[in-house]
Length: 122
Image 1 (cartoon, helix red, strand yellow):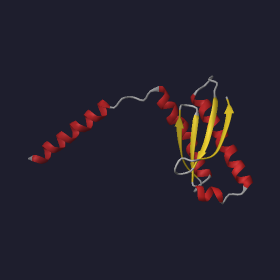
Image 2 (cartoon, rainbow, N blue to C red):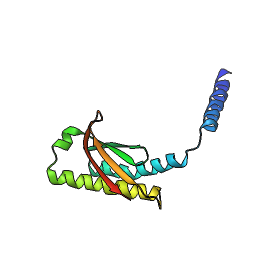
Image 3 (tube, rainbow, N blue to C red):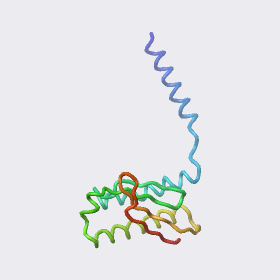
Image 4 (cartoon, rainbow, N blue to C red):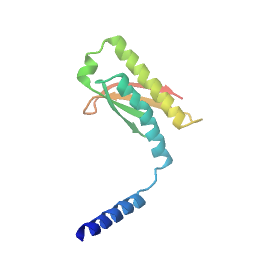
């Protein structure tokens, strides 16, 4: 007898939590879209590019595995930076059509120390 009651209570809690969830704002949707597009860079540079975070709408933090990054040759580092900046520029532009800004890309290690930084105008 208690099991159906538990199922009803659980179902009510699930429905209440879904109903209380606020919809994403336009800026949250833009950031989610940008991060989704950037995730391909993790596949392009496995073991080196570990993750992304957007700050202040125009700054992309790229988390690097420092040990793997140090092992890259100089040409590969330049190519990776260029690739990530170009992908961020494209992702940002598609999420903010017709908008102009200076985009910053900051490459950081696992504790947040800046390894490199580049910027581009859109």
